[in-house]
Image (cartoon, rainbow, N blue to C red):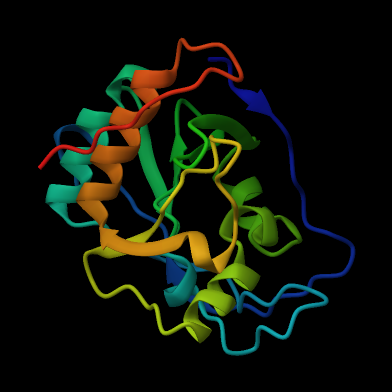
Amino acid sequence: MGVQPETCRSPAETILEPKGNFLAETQGEESTRSRPREVPLGSPRRRGYPLSSISWSDLTITPDDEALRALRDAWNWLLGDAWTPVLFSVWGDVFFERSRPISWLNTGTGEIFQVASDLDDFQACLAGEKIGEWFLPHLVSEVHQRGLRPSAGQCFTYVTYPVFAEGRYEAENIRIVATHEHFRLSGELHRSIANLPDGAQVRISIGP
């Protein structure tokens, strides 16, 4: 599967105010660990939506070592070994660095998109409109209203994944799962259907 490139620079009108938060930092043999560092991510409010109550802690997660191992094992067929995680969304998606560009692994659809030319460009994107596409803050708000809030070690996942025609980005299609389970199940799912033609019918069996 090819990486689909796009670029993003700071918009003329910045809609976010600076505020410290984290990007995952990993190196060498420690590549399965994420260590927080402060970066000016800002307050994630998207123009046109009443999201003043949504913070970066609602939109991002920090996977533990078990989850990171599951991520690398289950998605190795697509990602390989030479990549460094940068940021994780509450949807179980991964923003990662390979060489210099930053890419987005959408675990709901099994696609990779190149979203920024480097880390500075990525941080600029996080202060713009792309936040709505990447982190779905409006849907997070709707899911919160239904009483679903992941705890440490958990993330949102889908009852029916968006890779399928029936999979919708709707609150009714969202549930909470352990992050390591999301990485494992999503990776195994997309690996099993990667070579099927569009429109193929599949039967999914979830093991114990």
